[in-house]
Amino acid sequence: MSLPFYIAKRYLFSKKSHNAINIISGISAIGVCAGTFALVCVLSVFNGFGSMVEEMFSCFDPDLKIQKVQGKSFNTNDVRALKSVEGIAYITEVIEENALFRSTDRQQTGTVKGVTEEFGRMVGLDSILIDGEYKLSDGTFRYGISGVGLAAQIGLNPHTYDALYIYAPKREGQVNLANPENSFNSDKVFVSGVFSVQQATYDNEYLILPIDLVRELFDYSNGQVTALEIGVEAGEKPGKVKKEIQERLGDGYKVSDRYEQQADYFKIMKVEKWITYLILSFILLIAVFNIIGSLSMLIIDKSDDIRTLRNLGADQVLIRSIFTLEGWLISLIGCLTGILSGVAACLLQQRIGFIRLPGEVNPIPYPVQIEATDLLIIFLTVSVMGLIAAYYPARQIKMTH
Image (tube, rainbow, N blue to C red; front, side, top):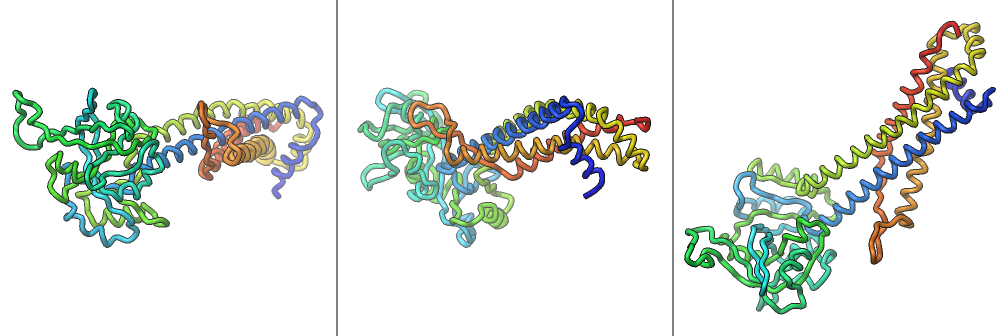
C-alpha cells in the first residue's frame, strides 16, 4: 500500500477535531450515493423498456429481412443460394403494399402484408393475438388477421360475418374516370384474428393476408416478392447468419436485423436514455462538488500534520496526493454504495415487481434490466468527477502550510 493512500485512508476514517468536517464528508458521500443510485435505476428502466419493446416487435418482425437496394420487388429465383446457408430455420415470402379496405359502412387505407402459412410460426404471432386465431385459409374462404386499431376503424372482428373488401390499383393501364372502380383489382376476405403489437405503426395499419391473394390483387407474378423474411434457428446468432447471407447476395440486396428494421425507434430510445444520463450526471456533479468544501476544511484541520510531513521530507506532490486521494475516496465510497444499492433495488424489482405501470386491470411491473456496461460507465463518471473535485482544493496547498 502506497504512503499517500495509507495516510488518506487513515484521515478518512479517523476522528477530526471539528465534528462539522465529518458531517460534511458524510453528506457529500450520501449525495454521491443518491445520484449514483438514481443513475443505476433510471438507466436500468430504459434498458427494461427497450427489451420489452424488442420482445413486442419480435412477435411481428423477423430475425432478418432481405430487400432489394434498388427497386421494390425481386424474384425468389434470384436468391436460391440462401437455401444452403446454415442457421436458417424459416424463409418466408412477403409482399407489402398499400391498399384500401371497405366494410359494410366504413372504409380505411392501410398496408397489406402477404405471407405464407409459416409466417405465424416463425414470429410467434399467436402470442399477440387478442381475438380469434391465426388462419389464412380453410380451403373455401381466405382470411385476414387485422391489427387491433384497424379492426376498430373498419368495424370488423372474428365474430362478425361481414366480408372485408380490399382494393388495389392496377399496375397497368390508365385510370377510368367514368368508372374509377374498373381501375382497381378487388377481392374479399373474412377477419379470422386480431393482433396487438402495442405500436400504432402496426396496430392501426396492417392486415395480414395469404400471399397468393396479394399477388392477384397487385398483379405480381409467381415468385415475385417485396421481401424475404428469415427466422434463425434457436441458438444461432442472427449477426453471423446475416453476414453470410449478405456475402452471398452481394451489394444489390440489403439484409436488416431486428434493430435495423426499427432503427428510428431504437435510436430515439437510446437518445432519450443518454440525455437522461447527462441530466442526472449534471445533478450528480453538484453533489460531488460538495467534496471541495469538506476537503478544504480537512486541509485546514490537518495543517499541523502537513507541517510535520514537510519537516520529515515530504514534498508538495506527496502532500497533494494524500488530500486528492482523500477526496476521491469519499466519492468512491458514495459511488460504490450507490451502485450496490441500485443493483439491489433493480433485482428486487425484477423478482417482486413492487413498482407497477399504471393500469386498471392487472398492471405489469416496471421492466428493469441491469447492464454491466452501464455500471462501468456510471463508475467511471463518478470516479472522474470525484477526482476532479478533490484535485482543486488539494492543489491549493502551499509550501508555507
